[in-house]
Image 1 (tube, helix red, strand yellow):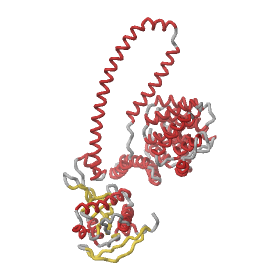
Image 2 (image 1 turned 90 degrees about the horizontal axis):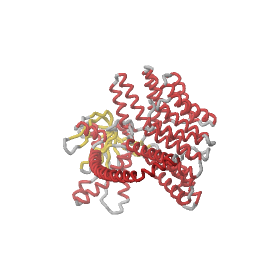
Image 3 (image 1 turned 60 degrees about the vertical axis):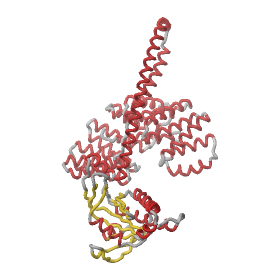
Image 4 (image 1 turned 90 degrees about the vertical axis):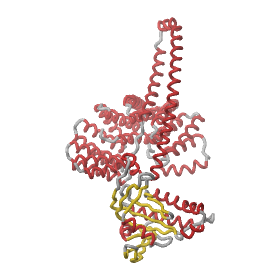
Length: 619
């Protein structure tokens, strides 16, 4: 299927989350502000019984920034529901927990939670809840790629929801089931489910459901070879989703349109749709879509023979690509759970079908069965013990290997940028690279040599570590690359190893934060430690970057840009940020700068310099 798998997962999760409050049809959207306001009520701890259960449900549902905190609320809701034997809220607690575990990527835990949610809903005689829980179980099986189990539970969900008045829940189950049938190339069944869902969504004026349904119908027609009809439906879907500002889905449907035009050999239109998808994803910070769009554009340029552009977009795809959850073990666990359920049901059927003749036959053979069973159990026990010991040994060995591997990778990433580290691991060496525009920052402490002669080595290192540790955190905050430290000098750069358009802006922000920290630490020196004043210099221009040496690797940068940045620092003043003319031209609209005039620079002659005072706009 051309549409990205993670988008299909997103749609399934979206409708599950939207149905999380299906008891109250007017509430569908999560809201972090609501969660933040409810925390104050939670902290007072004055609510009891059903009021506290409802509060915990709202907290778990609306907490979207911190999934671990949302899981904590769900677990508390489950524990309190068990204590009060409230099966309705027990169902809701497990349902909340299942959705959060699914968002985290732990599908096995999510599946277990949804089964428990369905069981609690059944005890509460809440048909809608059981139907929606079955739909979520089917969604998880679908994400795992277990088509048989997914179709079984979608059918169970639809059958239950037809008995209720919750039309949105029924339409959502029909939509997700249709998507599963489409994925399994059962196109007639898919269209049947989509059309029924569309009718329900239209009647209830549930536009987002209508948008997704139209898009999915369009994709089915495209798979059947009717590209023109497919484009009509997908275009309608895009228009609806644009009104709703659902840019995630829009980005993916635009990629699908790109694929349709590519099959029609219309390369120009295909590229236009792919770039529109990328622009939308970048504008709204949709990392998954940025990755998918970059990959699609890279493939289009490769087909056109433009390998340079293709490689540029492929690097961006690698940068944003999310790690893929290893579903193999999760799939096995899910199959084991389903097989267990089937076997339990089969046992019940077998017990009901017993009659007198079978009973007599079993009595005659009972003694032989007992002997055979005892022998079989003994052999199974021996084999199980052997496999368990082997499993424990392999698991322990793998854990040791993985720990050492992670330690090695972490050490390498602490020394080198990620891209450079990967290249070194792959090729055993790193090719030097030229960057057309990079911003370099140098810092230096005033009178450091004077204090170095008077302080003990321990105190001197302690003071430098105090400052440089904070500098490292600031570099990480602004996504800058620390290059090296030499004595009391600290060097970093923005715009590498991945070129960016705002590196000068981010470097100046970091420099301002460094000066604020150094000034504050000098004024609030509680322990009466040695404190310094700092000079900072910044310059922007081309550089060459690479790895020096064959042992004790060191990532470094070279070029006239680096030398000028160093001169900017040496010509700065304590507590000041001195920038070159090149950097000033880039950031002058964002920061209040003070022109210093032309100043003599060693080996460079007269150069214009500026002090950066503060941002023009509040940050």
